[in-house]
Image (cartoon, rainbow, N blue to C red; front, side, top):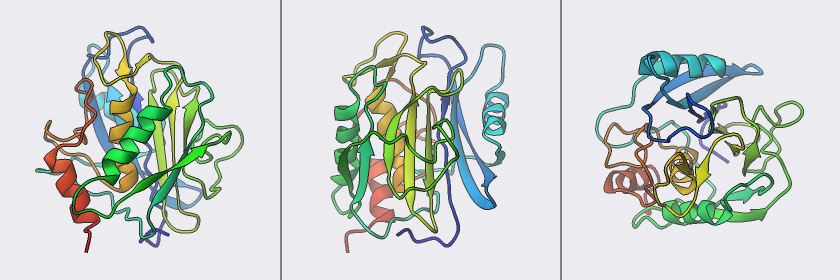
Length: 250
């Protein structure tokens, strides 16, 4: 179970302003919002690529509105903040649906699980839950209504145009964290910078930080920095400090 009495849902999306072949080096920004899902309070985090001629604030607010959320706060100063989500029962199993995967991201997901699980002084752990054919059930682009099925799944979906990925997490009732990446945008693998593509492991590492309960950090030294800075697949000292603070190994 998770230590909160209300439903906390965050959706993380990277919205690209250009077509799929566009360079991944365009400006990106992020914002936090709140929304309502079937009467439950939800937490929404959006990560967007800023269109030419548009302000970062406007792009972020549009992305929040697309998710039915209103903006609430900016990233805190210093290291990563916290969303309020804390997993009491660990390890957290996370399964992977490879359907539609263009780059063989299963190994990249496993690497991010290992990275967040191996921080000295922290008890946090995400364990591989194997492969699945389930579409991440609380991702709104999955067929049928959003439901809590008790599984923490990562998969691929035809997300709205310009959206790279979404992550949803709930607390209260059935505890669950689901994530989907878009089949409509360019991806690369190997933790290297490839022109016109986003490194999938870099994005998954950031997203699994949110699954753990971390919010954004304003420092580029953190993988939780709310902007894509190119391929980066190891945690910084600020990330490690934050996960130790949230899950002390005592």
